Structures are given as structure tokens and as C-alpha cells.
Length: 138
Figure 1 (cartoon, helix red, strand yellow):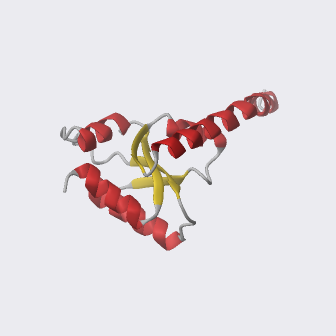
Figure 2 (cartoon, one colour):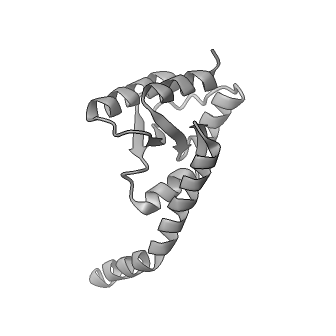
Figure 3 (tube, one colour):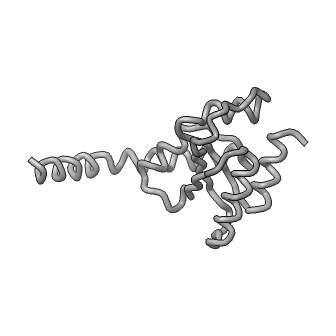
């Protein structure tokens, strides 16, 4: 079983519709899975993963998923973020990463567009919030 198939097996086990890797290691993780390139030896850096599950995951399921992904990637820590629970701007950052698995490309693309629209709608409010914070500290 190749790496892509192994990741798909993990995703199916936890009812994950779509899985992204994002952050500083996203490109090297993608190349490791899809192209078989060696993974950088920087195992001290965590791997950031964003998921969209098909069903609600229990805390136990989230922990077990993180442990399985740590074993799969060969790292000491994987941060798992649920897109359905993430701040709109974090969710937008996640989908700008690398999509490593999806059950349905069309549904994943539709959800990506939803996330981007939601973040775009909130930009004026976020800018106002940031300005209020800056004004409070000056």
C-alpha cells in the first residue's frame, strides 16, 4: 500500500471527508505522500492538519486520529484542526494549504468556496476589531 492509500485508509476509518496539511511543512509532506520524496529530517517541527469530517468526532476519536497521523508522518506531534470548528480566517488559511485527501473533489471545492466567502464577508469586521485592539494599546 502506498502512502496515499494509507492516508485514505486512515481518513475512511475516522469518516474524514477532506484532509489538508498546512503550515511550514505542507509542501514537503505533500511531496512525501504524492511523489515519494524523502521527508525532511526536522521531526521536531509539528505537522498541521485540517480536516472536514462527515460526522461529529468524539474527543477520543480526535486523540486517536492525531496519534495515527503522528505514526503515519513519523513526527512527535500533529495538530488536528476541524474546519467546522475553526475560526473563519484559520479555516481559510487551512484550505490554502495542500489538500491530501478528499472523498469528493466537487464537494471539497464547494466547501472551499464557502470558507473563502465566509472569511471575505468578515474582513471588514476583523479589520475593525484589530483597529480597536491597536487603539486600546496606544
